[in-house]
Length: 473
Ligand SMILES: Cc1cc2nc3c(=O)[nH]c(=O)nc-3n(C[C@H](O)[C@H](O)[C@H](O)COP(=O)(O)OP(=O)(O)OC[C@H]3O[C@@H](n4cnc5c(N)ncnc54)[C@H](O)[C@@H]3O)c2cc1C
Image 1 (cartoon, rainbow, N blue to C red):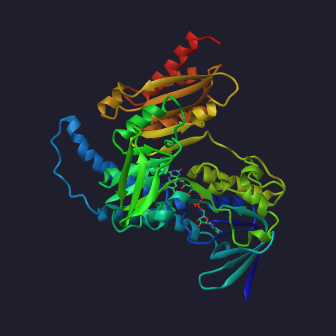
Image 2: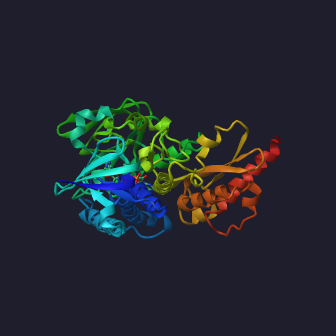
Image 3: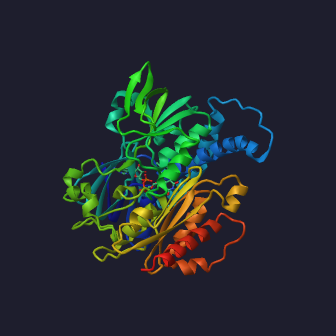
């Protein structure tokens, strides 16, 4: 016996984007169902943003104990490093609280609107769901939103050590921390987790391939960032590093920063080498929109999130865009509303791009950073402020890194990149300025409280202005 549901909109994937799509489509008056194949609760709360920030907070607390000497404080009593089971227990306890809030939201949706079970695409409009108790439901939907998220990439060179590899999907479930871990990747998640584990006493080394470093792209900032991070974190960029199994350990042969051959063994490898959109849906070959979905990079209209020529919309990490929670929610809102009003669709509200890495020092990229600003056809000016002698940063003994700001020939603020203290707040401030379309002069006319890290922004803007005056257009 198969229950049948007729819906205007079916949303596949009950994460951040899917929940936003469900709410937006429902608000627009569409009969909408939200379909999740594993567990509601979102990647962000279960295995993403929240548990990772909880682990980082514990690592910062551990690191703060060591920093006292710099302020003339007596050395702390040594702590017994080891499994640190209590650290992971607190991560899970707090994480479960956050997941609980999300589940409460989902449970407030009418039961008939939310389905949990394995998903099979039957044709262009029909989707079968087999619930854990084996009951089956067929949803016939006029429109579909695909918000199925993304999964960690497993690079092929890790095949020999596959059994010793874990990702952030498993990290927070470990009963205790490993003694050592090779961290594969130097993107945001690799840097955040690698540094946190290192500060919690795990012997780590990061292995990157393409010279990537978190959210940074500015060639002036990258060497500063690399030197700053390397001072406290073993980090290698060797595209030819080789992974093999040796005496039950992950053995890595690599060239170190000086080009010398080196090797090290680790208990496991934490793989954070990027994520790939979940677009291989069971049975999708039965639908005419299947090929367009697999080519989402070219077929998706980024402003309306409609797949060209279809009644299907894609949102969140499934689009293959930046893996950022608030953008996934915005995507969901746009896709859900357009799916409800289809065939009338509208471009949705987009915010100033902002990416943050919760490393130490933190990183921020505003407006797509240098990568975006430098692609403009017209001239771009840059200004810089170092945190080395920045008042507030020195007071706190966090005087590392630099801030780079960009403007066009008319003095219009274009964005920034930063490695330094409190980048999460300064990045946010600059993103607001960018979205408000402020000029450099308007930003300089704003208050800068003394002594704050934000004063570095004024220094960088003044530097940019001075350079513009030196080289008039
Ligand atoms: C370790 C880590 C740290 C992060 N930290 C941050 C951060 O600090 N700040 C930030 O902004 N972002 C962060 N992110 C990124 C952020 O978590 C994602 O961008 C966001 O969760 C994407 O939401 P989504 O709805 O697209 O995907 P998800 O929340 O993953 O939702 C997709 C859902 O679809 C379900 N699904 C998959 N396939 C199917 C199918 N065939 N049928 C039905 N359901 C399906 C999945 O089970 C899942 O529930 C982090 C990510 C990770 C992994």
